[in-house]
Length: 117
Image 1 (cartoon, rainbow, N blue to C red):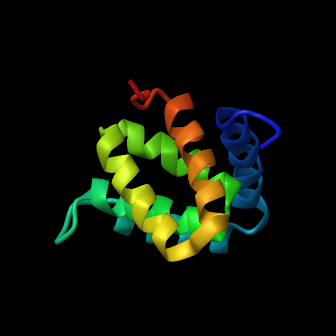
Image 2: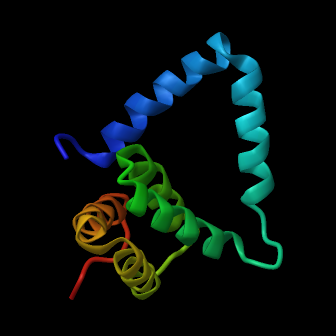
């Protein structure tokens, strides 16, 4: 990680706005899919966000860490919940996911998530 996650989200968000103009059909489809998955259903929106973060960790996606950490904090994910999600992501992805899990915790804390005591 060479910069903060808030800055990563800002830079990527700016480029995504450009995509809205340059490839609008793709972005409209993606945004519709995103909206459909971010509501409570059989799984809560919070659970879905934790799943998204775990996938971002396993995919080693820095932008995913930035955006999903912010969403986790907004949805009230506790540190204990975040840590349990990290356990699953690490279990499923091994050593590389362990490194990315540490980065995910940095992103969560940068957005105001609970710090370790």
